[in-house]
Amino acid sequence: MAGVIPKEIANAITDCCRTCESTDAVRIADRLMELGEIRMHGPEHHYLTAAAILTAYCNCYHMEKKSLLVKAYVRTNIIPVGVCAMYGCCGALMGAGAAAGILLSAHPFSTGDLRTVNRITAGIQSRLAEYGGPRCCKRAVRISVYEAVQGINRYMGCSLSAAMLDCRSYPENKDCQGKKCEFFVT
Image 1 (cartoon, rainbow, N blue to C red):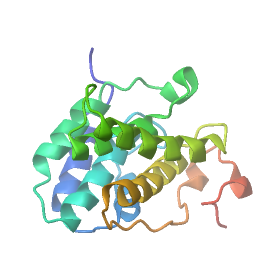
Image 2: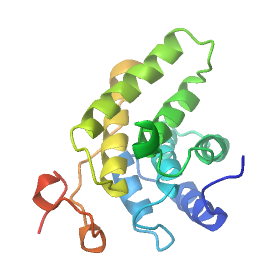
Image 3: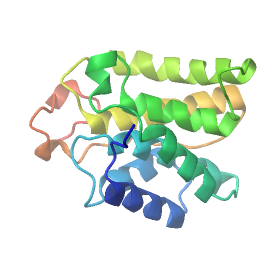
């Protein structure tokens, strides 16, 4: 299957993560979403979510990022466009699951590791379901990254940070829910 994330966008995300020193996954995600290459909506948010989580983890624990980012790109580049509506599982959520799976080296025959990945993604899915539609990739990324960090900390014994930040993208989002969204400020 051909990839769905434009290579120049994936490269911009990877380049930013490789030089990033922050340990706050949501701040990293926000920085990535501000890159000129990132569109309001699109499959790049799937990789962006995984990359932000992995970058924060690697920076926190002084690990090499390159191989983990490659794994994240490979896993997220096959997530279909529009997966949130067509399959009932947001691509940002799947990106967070990919990141957790990579950190745990989980595979289909894992026992505890697979359970942990599913617990992490279940928390994200529950939060995303509170909103319904229309889609907002920026909101989905913030929720997915924040909830993934909470799950990683809870189930993996980590101490990653994730600040909840106000949205600055709403003026460009014609489908913004405005005050119905927890990240909206005027």
